[in-house]
Each structure stands twice: as structure tokens, then as C-alpha cells.
Image (cartoon, rainbow, N blue to C red; front, side, top):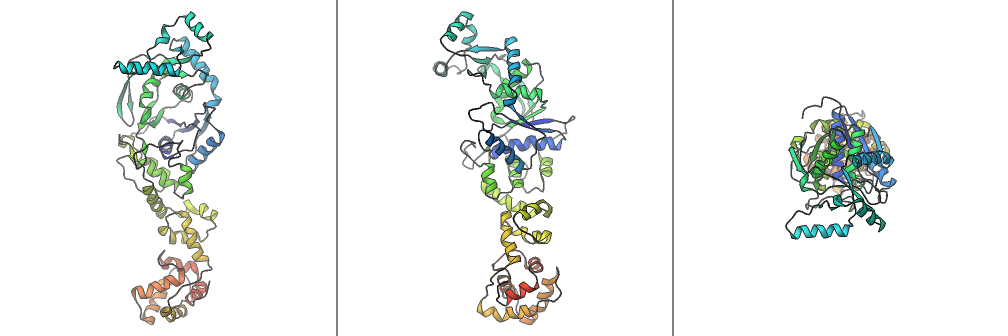
Length: 451
């Protein structure tokens, strides 16, 4: 993908009405990482005008979850604090004749839709409200009806160049005039998003393909408000392995749950961004590396299946490649020491970062060793032959002496040593663990003593 000529401005605009799932993360990551790569601005903008469902708790959870992913917004905005801006935009649209009041109830609208379907017509609004006289509107309001306000579409082909889908078009003549203001005076996303994008200087809007039709309507609103629309990109949606769509309401694959299960944020980011593209899904060392790989033109048009088992495998593969500096603080929080030498010794055997605690207990002890009776003499000999000089090369020096002295080789040599020193049948290489265990503890364990 070619670089932008001016620093872009992008936004992620979730509704704080539930926990984010991996599909939401996909959108947030595309926006934030594109902005990061291009030296632009990333805005977290809460679509919280639905006061009945929006909560501060969910807003805080969203900030925490994208922070866990490593995304740190340059600005945070709340639509609930911008109602005066929407009021002004509504008045401009009314003055321009683009916003008109309609009084039908939902039951009446549904009856109209059914009637049109029976006649083989598309179930779009018939614009009956445009024919009302002032007196007729007064009568309806006298009956207690309050209008919702519809945006009068031009009824034309609206085209744009989509970063993901190429040249796109929506014929707004096939759509109902969109409701922008509800009966209670609250605003719908279709309006607030456009007003915010204009005033915040948003240059690129990257969102799910379920918004393609909205784009045709919103481009008309941009133009009606005298603004050039941003560049749009509509990515494919993530679905469950069953093909079912993701839902915040149902809690599908929430970031909170996946984090609690021990999945790595970097693995989740990589899978959320790369699955459903022609790019290979493989571990990345950083978000900067992931940002460099993003190419919107390589995103598939088909829904992308997000498999939790693939995430688990990618979490393990990611841990196996992470540098010590990236995990040092998290290891310390788990009470794990040993520094870089310990991390290099154990990372290849981890499925979750918390698994490192098990191997730290092996290093630190105490550990009650296990040995077969027939191996007791061999292990006592092994203890006697432990080198006095301890260092990173202690294991090969020890084995070089122990092998000829014991007459053992292969599994008969190595397996009893591993079980006695670590209490496990398999695990990190003893070559890396033995220097960390130390001579005193190693000798005690080989002699069958807890240490």
C-alpha cells in the first residue's frame, strides 16, 4: 500500500454498551496501526448517545481492553459531550431542506413495508411525510405524535474508491430516507459519525463491510454539510468457526475473556489483523511489525473465520519468539526472577506466560525429587561428579565426565537426570536449567533430598 502524503487521522468509535470482541479489535487495530505506520492520529471516540444502554463501566473496559492490545489513542472523545454540534448540524440540514419530519409509528411503517413487498416493490419509505401540509402536521402533533426526522436522499448513484473493495457504488434511490433524529430527539450514528468526522478532521474511515450501504448515505450527508468525505475502507467481518457472527451482547470471544484465559495480546492482534487476508498468519515481534504488514488490498471479500484454537497455538508460538525485555515486567509481576537467562531457557516450552511460574518453582525449589530404585546408584554418582566450577557450560562438562564413568548413554543417561532435577518427564533443556538451579540444589536432588 502506498504511503499517505499527509498524516492521516483515523478513529475507532465503539458504543460502550458491552465488552469488545475480536471483531471490534480487528477494526480498532486496522485504524490504530495504519495511523501509527503513517505518523498520523488515532482517536478513540465513544458513540455513547444511547444513554439507556451506554455505561461508564463499559467505556472504562473498552479503554482497558485496547490498552491491553497496545493501542494508545492520541485523543479520546465522547459523543454525549457534543450534542450541541449535532443540534447545529440538524438545523443546517433543516434549513437546506434535507431533513424533514415524519410521524408514522413503527407499526405503521411495518405495515407499509409489508404492503410494498406484497406488490413486488422494495420495502423503502414512500416519503408520504413530504406531502403533509403544515395543518396536517399540527393535527398529528396535537394527537401527541412527535416526529422523527429523515434525511432526504438525492436518489442517485454514489461512488467512492474503497481501500479494501476497490470502486464501490450505492444507488440511494433504492434506499429509504434515513432517520437521523428519533422521536425523543436523540441522534443516530449515521448523523453523529459524519459530524464528528468533519470536525475532527478524520481522513480515513476503516470499518466493517456491514457499513457499505451506510457509506452511500453518509457521503450525501457529508456533501449536504459542505464537506468532502474521507477515504473509506470496508474490511470483511470475523465470524465464529461455525460461521455465526460475533456479538457484544452475547459475549462472543470478548477480549476480556481471552485475556483472562492467558492468550497473548500480540497473538490476538496478529490473528485479528491477518486472518481473512492473503498474508500468512505467523508470530510478530511487535505492533510496529504488524503495522508494516497491513495491506488493505489483500483483505478477502469473504467472511473470515476466527478459530480460538488457532489463537492458542499462535499465543504459544508468539511466546517462543518474544524477547526478555518485552516480558520482564510481566514476569516480575508473577514473582518470577532469573532474568534473561531463565526466560531463554523456558520460553520454548510455554503455552501461556503463566506456565513460566512452574519452571521458576523448579529453579527456586524446594522440589522433592523422584527416582527409580534402579537409578539411585547412578544418580549418587552423578551428584559426586558435579563440577565445582559452575557456569553456563556446566552441563556439557558434567555429561562429558558422567557418561564414561557411568557407562550409560541415551535415555538411560539423560532421563533419570531430568526427573531427579526437575520432577518432570519433559521440559526445557537441562543445559539451560542446570546453571540456574545451582550446584547445591542439584546435588541434593540427585541424592534424593528435597531442595
